Image (cartoon, one colour):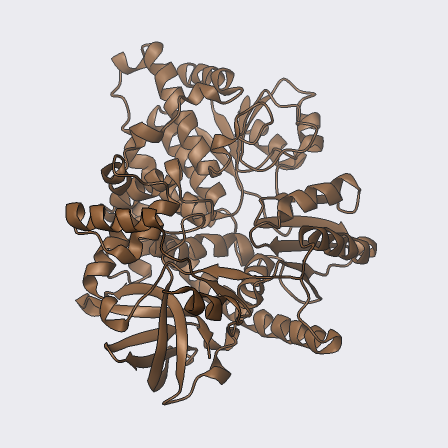
Length: 594
């Protein structure tokens, strides 16, 4: 594409108020295209993906088939790992019960399940506590910790939580009970008084593994623990467990926690998907069945089919159902729990749709009032379920491409959840607000965070966030979407789709390729889905035709731009529709330019 065409897309806003960023082909790309086309029959349209992932001629085959052994660090590089594995090994040798305190999301459930199944392999009695989101809130509380102690646990391990739970752990520290924290959330300035803390985000650790999920850290810990047990001669009596069989749980938690799918995370997911396809975990198998899965599981399966059902229990149901399912050893019990999760998730979907329409109305009202879309979206709802506000914040963020904080108003205290965009570290902002005593609780990641706040501080907190976002955007808000390649419809074929599958898995930090098709003509529009909430758009250009889909059309700004025989430019992802054993290449539309 020449510079003038580039300028057209980068100087005109799309329907989603984005500029489309296309790069002029460099000499390096041209050389890459020539080499990889001749050597591997690799499509030139995907060369930017290789460059973005720093793939060279020397490591191309390793990138296609990454080996965990080449990416897995020595567990002892993490501060406190050595004392952690030694302490847990003591409990295993002495056959003492162990308590596990997890989080109610998928990363927490898979972390707790992974650790439980590993300990049970050695005959250890494990007691798990997943807090009730509404009655207990996020993270350890002293009542729940004491409950685990009362069941005989002298050691409690928190997974995917605990790093900012100073007060309850101070109380526990007054006893002779040890607590180990395994977490990946950003610590505050003061670490809680635990026996040991394994967290890649501790200041003493190098930054290279900050991107790991809690279940990824838990897996690395059991690698170190297995080594410690081997050195103690445990495996002279019993067979050493095959840790790779646990990678299905690691893959599920990694994808659903939306951490970057690069490096070790990409290895975890790629290997874990192979384990999931073998249907070895009864709980995951039951979830696949209840989801009517009719294709080999991929990252989309984990993120959009399985994960939401596990999450639903923590949002509006009983928070321990997810982990109970994942550790189930009885087929009938697993099927029963999967059915419960399915029903809860269907209820969650209806509530989410209702709240989403209300939130969109509030944003549009504010937009009309001030004459533009705010750079930061801050919404307060009186009847919004606090278990769903995270999803709601994500939907609003996606629709408007703005960081969004949703507050579920309570009587004296309220809960909140936020989702952000690149370069707006919302978790860091929440921690700063916590230090200023604007929040009762708060923290998270760069792209997602949660909070508890006193109602009389909501407006002050809103002003604080708006000021932070303004500082992040010294210039007027500009949103760009990087385009992998511009293609004609004829180039969107199964050959290209096969290579896209080989280069995956795709997700946060490793986005699926986005292709631009210019000057397509709409031939047909067909609504589909139970509530006709999705739209099939049949389009053509001078090279061919393709079926395109837009999911949840009412949550987008596209509907008014679509009409039969209209010509426009579309941006989206190539996908393989494997419904009813058919393998058809289609295009999912993510943005439109007229």
